[in-house]
Amino acid sequence: MTSLGRRVGSYICSELCGSVMNQRRYASSRVDWKQLRPMILKRIKSRSKEYPIKRMIPIAEEVFRAREIVTEGVSMLLEVVPVHSCKFCPEVHIGAMAHQMKTCYGFKRMVKDQPHKWGPGNLNDILVPVHSYHLKDMFQDEIKHDQRFDFARVPAILELCHQAGAEIPDEVLYKGDQLSTEVEGNNQQPAHLLPDELRYIGQRTMDAWESMRVGVTKLLLVYPSKVCEHCSEVHIGPSGHKARMCGVFKFEGWKGMHKWKKAGVDDLIPPKIVWHQRPHDPPVLVDSGRDYYGHAPAVIELCAQVGARVHPKYHCMMKTQGLAPPVQ
Image (tube, rainbow, N blue to C red):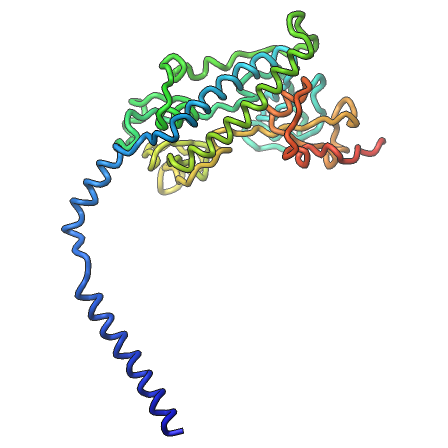
């Protein structure tokens, strides 16, 4: 026992002495941040030379081409497939007859469980526009509140592709809201588009939609993007801007300042979820079958209406094998 106690005591002493010696050694080898500060600032200023990354340029160009295909395809399908948009909320329905479910909450969210007042939909109801500031340089100084009108607003996807090295013409980059051309609903197919041609357009649009989302996901792994936690403002760049435009908590102490977090693909390409009407559903969707109906992204539902094959990953959301609502 005596020898065991001595061993334990010597071990504890060695550990204590060793920790004291290590603290002294670390204290003597502290980093002089005053000398490193110029090196760090030089590194930050020179990091812009590493961008754009050459391997990511083909992905950015592919995303740009896919966006053009999606925009063109959705515009053509809107001339064939009826799209209904509520005048008081963002609800959209794709199909011949709009649903009669009381899910309208108004444009100020002051009411709920109200019937929708439907009108003709347009391109922005399917492809939700998301804009951001167009930066001259990826690592330029932060945009101040007084400078918010000095920078143009462009689609966030195009800004991401531009910073990734894709060559985007100015007429496309600054076209902005000119894509929002209202298309009236029409139940009859145009004479110059056969069902097979419509199916090809729908399948091509759906494939381009998936390719665009995959490409944006890859770009976001390399190029930083921010989104506000309280609103839908998006900024493409390493740090968010300082413009006080957050309209949720203007009464708070930060006076409309955005609270930035890392952006995802859904922040740049909102899927716009709509109700999916299956073949065994009634012609008009009603409140009693709300638990039985499925959902789908607006682009997927629009393409499925003309016969495009839907990827199996959407089958669970669309409830393709689900039961029909009970007949009342």
